[in-house]
Amino acid sequence: MSQDFIEEFNEIYKLYNQGIYTDAEVISRSIELLGTGNTELWTVFPAEVKNGIRKQLDSFSEEDELVYFGHENVDAMKKKLLLVKAWLAEQN
Amino acid sequence: MHGRQILQGHFGRHYKLHFIKNGPVPRSLTPLRFVDSHSARRFLAQLHTPQSYWQWLTRDYHDVANFSGHQRDYLQVVSNWVLQGRLRIYEVELPDSHALSRSVASLQDRQGYQFQFAPMKQALASLAQPQRFNSIQQVYQTLYDLAPNLEQLQSVVADLQLIPAPEQQTYSQLMDALAEGLTEERVALYINAPFKRPEPAGAAAETAANMPGNRKVELAPAVARQADEGTNKNTSENKNFSISAAAQSPRIKDYEVNPNGLVRSRDEAIALARSHGIEIPDDINIQFVGNWKRKDTDAEYFDVGAKYKPDDWIEWDDFMAHRGEYSGTVPVRINQDILNSDEALLANIAHEMHELNSLKKMFDERGALQAKEIARLVNTRDRGGMAGNLHEQAWDISDALILKLRGRN
Image (cartoon, rainbow over all chains, first blue to last red; front, side):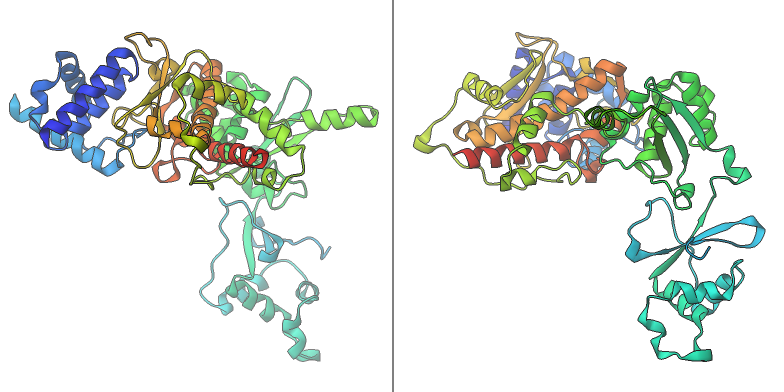
C-alpha cells in the first residue's frame, strides 16, 4: 500500500518538475498522501516539499476556517492536516 | 386607495400584504409570524385602514362565499389566510420615509445612468422593480460598469450599513460587501436611464441593449460567441442554453466514444477545442495525465486543498507553475482516458476554460481576488459556491456545446 503512495507522489513530483503542477498543488497533494497515515512517505519527500509542508502547517490551527479548491473532502482534508501536524510535532 | 397594499401600523411602521400567488419576494425578507389567527387578527385590526379594505381584499376569492350579509367577517378570512401562509405580511420602508432617506445611495455612471441602491425592505413598497441578477458574475459586471471611486463606494456601503467602518476597508472589500448585498438580495438596485430626446427606433433598441444590467455578461469569449450563434437557430438543443438556470452538474453525463476507435493526441484535442470556438490562451497548459485517480471529474486545475483562509489574497500567478518547460503557464490536467471521446474532450475543456478565462479577466481588472470570492465563483454549492456561478455556467456551456455537436452529426 505504501509503495502505491510513494509511486503516486513520485509521479506528481515528476509532473511538478515539468510544470504540470503548481507549488501549492504539490504541497497540498503531499499533505493528503501523508495524511493517509503512510508516514514512510516523509523519507521520500525532497527537502523543498518537507519545508513547504512545515511552512503551511505552521500557519494552520484547528480553529482556522479554510477555503478548499481541492478535490479532497473538506472534513477529511482538515483531519489530515491535523494528523500530519501532530505527527510532525512528535518527530521534533 | 384600496389598490395599494401598503398599510400603516403603530409607531409609523408600514406593512405590505403579499399574496404568495403573486410571486416570490426577495429572499432576505422574512414575513411576520403569528401563533394563531387571533393574534393575526389583532395585528391586522390595528392597521390604519377602513373595514371596507378587508372586503375589497377578499373580493376575488370564494372563501367568503359561505358567508352572507352581516355574517361576512372579512377580517377573519384575511387573518386565516395569514396563518395559512397564503397571504404574508412584510414590514417595509417607504421610499419617502425620513429614516430611509439616509439609507438610499445614488451614483451616476459615465453614460448618465442613475444607479440607486436601497435596502431591500424598500423594494416591496416601491412601484419600480429592482434590478434582477442571474449570477454573482453579473453583479460584479454591473458594479464594474458603474466603476465607482473609493470615496463613492465608501459612501454607498456606509449609507446601506453593509459593514462596519467602511472608511477602513479596501476597494475590493467594499466591492465584495456591495456585491454580496445585491447577490443575497439585501440591497435593491434601481437603474434609471438619463433623459434623452426620442431617438429612431433602431437607436433606442441599441440603447436598451447597452443599458447597465441589460449588457451581456461576458463569458469565455469564444464559447459565448458560439452559444450566441446557436441561439440564432431555432433548434431544440439550443433551448437548453440558459445562464439564468445554470446547472449544478452536467445534464449530459454519458459522452459518446469516438467511432472507429479514434484516440486523439494532445495537439489534436486542443485543435479540436479551438475549432469549436473554445478560447485557450497561450498561458494555459492543457496536459493529459495517465493513472487518473479522481472519480468526480476528468479535469482539474488549481487543486489546492488546504492552504487558503477566506480573506487570503490570490493572484493569477498562484495558478501558474514555476518550474520546468511549462513554467509561467497555468496547468490544466485532464484524464488521458477521455482522449477517445471528442464529446468528453470538448465538454471538459469548455468547462475549465470558461472558468479560467472568466477568472483571468477578473484578475486582469483587479490584480488579486480573495480566496472566499474565488470559492464562491468556482466551487460547487456544498463547498461554498454560489448558485449560477462560473462553475454552474460552465456546465450549461459544455452541455450546449455537446448538444450542438450531436445536432450537427
